[in-house]
Image (cartoon, rainbow, N blue to C red):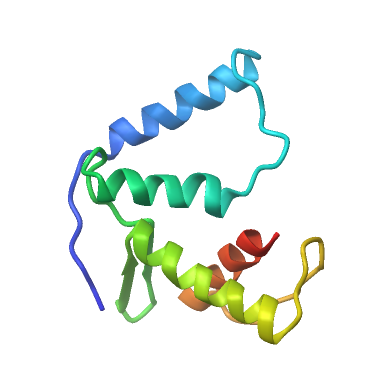
Length: 120
């Protein structure tokens, strides 16, 4: 389903840029274990839920025919957790395993990538 989002994305972009600049200048320590799905997406979902960040789509896909799919950070987190559970429990995926996904660039392709990141 299509949901409308609004908000100022410049604040988020400037925060990201300043964070990476601080890492590049060795002002912040890199974590030993980093997982984009849990360390970034889940944090942004929490900030949106707490009202400390305006609602913006985490994922916005538009097909050649104009069909749109929009997922909030919370939705992308929830869907990727479900997909990661299937991969780990039903398929036996373990941290460090390699995965190849043969799909066109549809929303599920991106969801599978986030789920694989989440699974390690």
